[in-house]
Image (cartoon, rainbow, N blue to C red; front, side, top):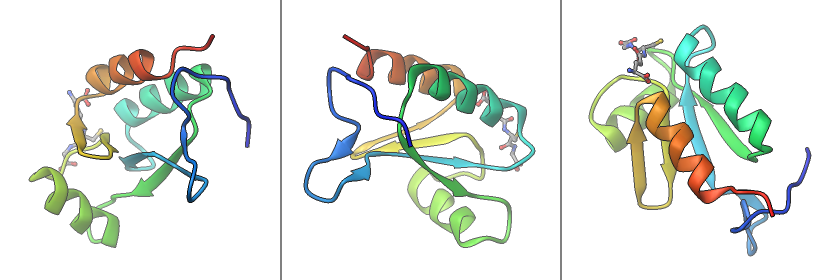
Length: 96
Ligand SMILES: N[C@@H](CCC(=O)N[C@@H](CS)C(=O)NCC(=O)O)C(=O)O
């Protein structure tokens, strides 16, 4: 796992666990767009499989209200829409 120097650490310093959670389907072009952007920015994140019928799917609908991916959770911030998720990450993970 690669680490980047960022404005805000991508790990919770108490648990050393990535703070971004990204709900996805394996074969989802919008999810792939977010994965690529996150890789380019060296964002460390936890990916949750939210394919229909999975526990991740139930979690996704509970948190966001609808079965749509990609879906980002960053603490209290919950977000659908790949473009918004990428813009949010760019804002919070600028490299020095
Ligand atoms: N405009 C959205 C489109 C997302 C989207 O259409 N995701 C599809 C999967 S690729 C989805 O979740 N569809 C609802 C479903 O599978 O029930 C974005 O850019 O994130």
